[in-house]
Image (cartoon, rainbow, N blue to C red; front, side, top):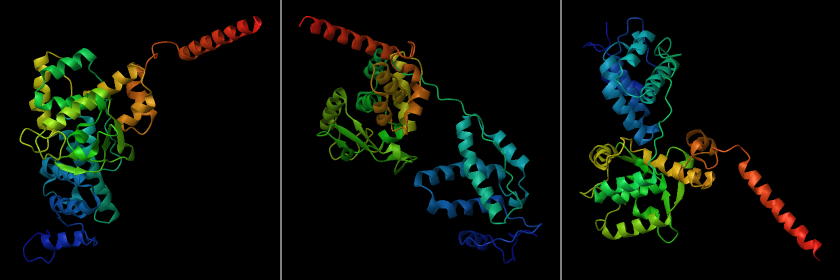
Length: 340
C-alpha cells in the first residue's frame, strides 16, 4: 500500500518533516513515495546551503522540467532509462543548459542513495553532453559606433559601458552608483543579478576593479547628471526599476541590431568585443584578463588568442624586433667610442 493513502501514519506531512530533519526514510520494496514529494522536500532542505540565485534556478528547473516529467512515479522505481528519457525529452536548448538541468537531479539521486532511500542512483555514469565552444563574433569599431547610433538613447550609456568594460550582463544590471568611483576612475564589481535576485559573484576572480577608460568616464559622468534622481542603480529601466536581461535583449538589443542593419548577434558579444578590440590593439593580455574577471591567461588565449597582436606573425617576431634595436644601439655606441 502507498504511504500517501489515508489512514497511514506515514502521511505526506510526516514524510516532509522526516526529510527536513534529515531522518532516514525506510523504503520497502512496495514503497510508493512519489518522486514529486521527495524532490520538492529535497530542494527545500537544500535551500539553506544554496546561493539565492542557485536556489531560484533549481526551483525553476523543478517546476519547468523535472516535476512534470517524473510526477508521482515512485522514487525507488525511477530507472536509468527513465533518466535518459528525461534528458532526451528536454526541448531544443543548449547542451550547456541541459547539463545544468541535470546537476540538481543527479544531486538528488546521489543524496537519496547515500541516505539509503534508494538502492542506487539511476543517474550514475550518465555523461555530460558535449558543449560547443561559445561563438565569438565581436563588433568592429564601425559596427559598434553604428549600433550605439541606433539603440534607444535611454540605454546608450548601458551599452557604451558594456562595450568599454567587458562586464557581464548580470553584473551590469546590478551595478550601483556606490560602486562607481569617479575620483579613482574605477568601477568595482561586487555582485550580480540573476533571476531577479542579487548576490555575490560565484568566483573570486569576478570580484574586481575595472578601469574607466576616458570615453567611458565622460559618458558615465554625463549619465550621472541625467539619470533619474535618487536612483540607486547606474542603469535603471525607464520606470526606475532594475533592468531584466531577457527584456533588455528582446526589447532593446535585437531591435537596435536590426535598425542598424547589423548581423544578428547575442548580447554577450559586447564582452567579446571588448576583449578582441583591446587585444588586437596591443593591450596587455594580463590587463584584459583582470578587466574581464578571468582566473588566468589560459582563458584569454583559448577564446581570444587569434586577436592578440602579432599572432599572425611567426613566434619570436617581437623578440627579433627587440634584438635589432639592441644591435643598432650597440653599433651606435661602438661608433661613438671609436671616435674618441
